[in-house]
Amino acid sequence: MANCPKCGAHLRMIDWKQRCPHCSANVFLYDLQERLMLDADKAEVQHYHFQKKVDRVKASFVGSKLAITRIVTSVLPVAAVFLPLFRADLSAVSADLPSKFDALKLYELVDKSDTGALLDYILSSGAGGKLFLAGVVCFALGLVSLLLHLILLMLSCSPKGKVRNYTLSFLMFIFPAAFIVLMLLTGNGGFASAAPMIGAYIYLLLTGVNFLIEVLVFRQGIEITHKQCYVGGIPIEEYFKMKEKGISHEEIRAEMYRRLSAQQREKERELEERTREHEHHHGKEASAQ
Figure 1 (cartoon, rainbow, N blue to C red):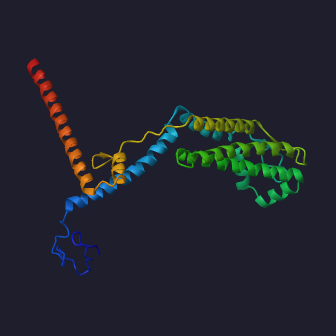
Figure 2 (cartoon, rainbow, N blue to C red; figure 1 turned 180 degrees about the vertical axis):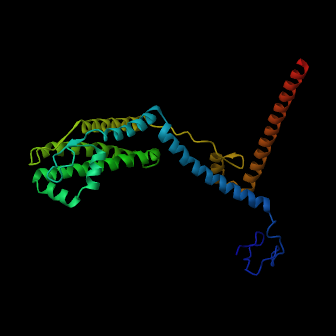
C-alpha cells in the first residue's frame, strides 16, 4: 500500500477509507494540485529525454544534404546484387543449375539444391573450391553488413553512431572486395570456370561511394536541432539550471505559476484579437451585401 501524503504513515490493506487513520487527512484530495504538478513535471522531463532521441533520429536522416545523400548511397548497392555477380560451372552437381548467378539465383541454389552434395563437390575441387566457398561467404557477410547499415542509419547521431557507421560502411566495402579477389583466385585453383561478373564490380563501386559519403557526412558534421521543451512553462534547460543552483522547490513552483499565468493571458489576448478580426471581417461582408 501507499503512504499518507500528509503525515507519511504507511497505509495498510485494511486502511481503505478515504481518510488517513493517523492524521485524518483526506488521502485522495490532500494537496492534490501539487501532486498533479509533480506528476506533470516528471512526465515533461521524460518527454524531453524522449524528444532528444527523436531529434537525433530525424537529424540522422535529414540533418543535412549529405545525410540525405547517404540514404540513397546506402540503398543503391541493394540493386546491384540483382545483376550477374559471378559465373560458375556446377553442372557436375546438377545439369539444371545456371552458370551465372545473382543474389536470387544464389539463394535458390542454396535453398533448393542438396547442400551436402554441393559442398562436397566444391570442397573436392581443391584449393579453387575452397576459395570459391570463401568468396560466397564473404558475399553473404557483405549483405548482412549492408542490411545492418540500413537499419542502424537512424542511430547515426547517437553517442556511438560514428564508430558504428564507419565500421559497417567499411565492412560493406571490404567483404565485396574480398569476394571479387577470391573469385579471381578461384580461376587459378582448379575451379577455373568460376569468376566475378559485372554486377560484383558495380556492387563494390557503390559500396565504395557509400563509404566516401559516410566519411564526408561525419567530417562536415550534422547539426541536431532540438525541439524546445518546457517544465511547467519554464524552458527545460533553465529548469535544470535552477535545480543545479539549489533553488527551493517552492520558488521554482512559484515561477512556474507565474509563467503559466502569463502564457494563459497571452493565449486569451490572441484569442480576443482573432475574434475581433473575425467579427470585423464578417461586418464588412454584411455591409457589402
